[in-house]
Every structure is written in structure tokens, then in C-alpha cells.
Image 1 (cartoon, rainbow, N blue to C red):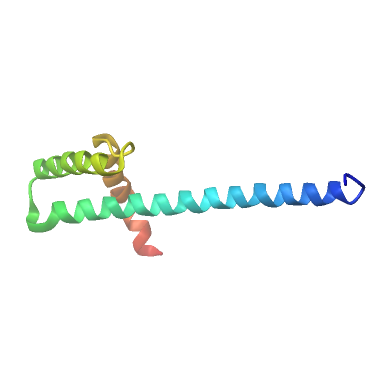
Image 2 (image 1 turned 180 degrees about the horizontal axis):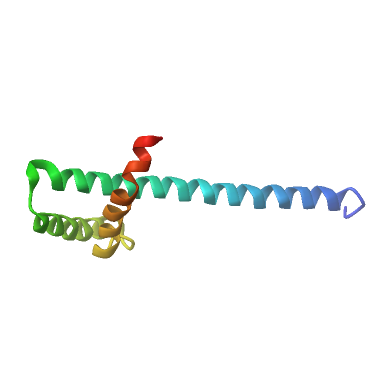
Length: 98
């Protein structure tokens, strides 16, 4: 079966699969980035509801980190959840412009 027509067919399929995997990776990264920004937005909005003090925000992040880790596993440490909050704060103005 490995005649002259096979090699271009095979190489074309390999290229298609590689391109598709790269596109899927980019799509997943975009979705995760969007989700993390939205998590940060929700945290900030909850913190600002009723003009609560900063220590409430720390408690909120700590509780979310624990509960999200229990539910979803790795990736939701206190540091990571705090960084999601910071991510939103850093880029909220850009989102309003778009």
C-alpha cells in the first residue's frame, strides 16, 4: 500500500491532526483564561458588596481555595485563587473597552 500516493495522503493527515491539536489547545487556553478572569470578577464583586473590609477578601479567597480544591483537585490553591482575583483587577478596564 505504500506507493507514491500513500506518502502525501499520510503526511496530509498528520498535518491535519497536528494543526487540529494545536487549535484545540489554543481554544482550551482561551476558555480557561476567560473562566479565571470571570472567577476573579466574581470574587471582587463579592468582596465589594456591602463595602466589606480587606480581611473579608482574604477569608473569601481562603475558603474558595479549600472548597474548589476539594471539588476539582489541583489548581485552586490560595495563591492561584488570589491570582485569579488579581488577573481580573489587572485587566478589568480592557474588558470594558472591548
